[in-house]
Image 1 (cartoon, each protein chain N blue to C red):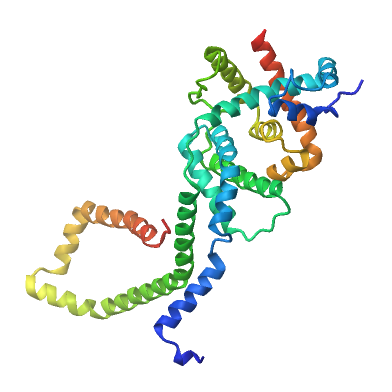
Image 2 (image 1 turned 180 degrees about the horizontal axis):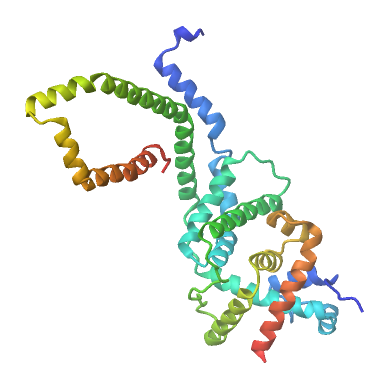
Length: 189
Length: 163
């Protein structure tokens, strides 16, 4: 087809195809739903703990999946994909923190207490103690502790998510863990 | 004595805590080791506190459905694609606008003597009279120019910004 033979509809169609190839979402909806069901909750909790704001965590979660969907990535395993999502989320939380500059504590919002929990007062107290202890740490240390002990990530995975060297993770975790454990023990005694 | 940063039982211990097997439903060997290992004691203390906190938080989380997140992402991708496609067009518009302003300025320069003559002829005011009034009370003019200088960049920002 010569250029002079093109109709406006053809131009629109070709332009649409060009845009689609460059900017389209790189996954089908069914695959996405399956990934989302497995990863959304831990990601949201991580973002909420990072930002201390449920609405902001909602926004960052949406942005995380948007970026994830736009990237034509090949993932070696389920864990690799999950790490990638956490890495996007961490970068977004860092960007947000840099933009707003305010110091975000581990979380200041009212804790949700599970109704079946035997001792609501004790549970609430433990959460408050943890929040205070975690607030003593740098953001990077908090992230490392969360990824290691809640998400069960290995040192290599934590290094990949936080963009650090594997060798530095051991010491980072050790210092953060020792500090939090000491503060928690002091509260208990 | 060198400080021990990690322990070989650490991973096993984290798995036991996260699976809620610690302390009653895990190996006696692991329990007896943890009782004497400083690293493992810290790991249990911190992992248990964090895991409890995560469980309690997760309990009440209301997330948007996967379909909604997908739909929003698709909408956003289309909008971004449109913006990418329109970017060269915006540049052409800006260039055309700049050309228009240039032509208008040239026209005004050419027409100014004629306009001035016509204005003075119609009103009967001498140009030096206007100048004297402006020099005596310059504030309205200064204020107008100031407001224009402030508003012009703001207007340009809103015209050309993405948001």
